[in-house]
Image (cartoon, rainbow, N blue to C red; front, side, top):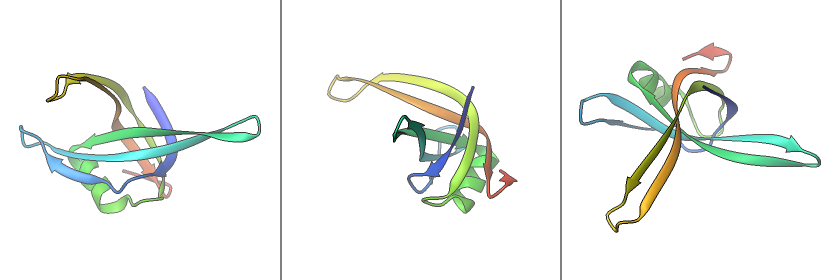
Length: 101
């Protein structure tokens, strides 16, 4: 389970999967104060169904939001034969401006 509070780093994009499910993808940036400086991390977020539609309609670059969901590790080989990996949070709950999405 992942719980993140940060800012939307990229405008959400929406698409349909091969099974006609709606998915919304965006990047979230978080920061933690470490001694005398901030440590910044970037997170890939995906949401499905109604939550995807809400995020596409409401979330904008720079918005401060809370995301709760599960962590997924993906591995694949690209077209050139190079191994690729990606860590992504599949959102179950999103709160922004004090409301729940």
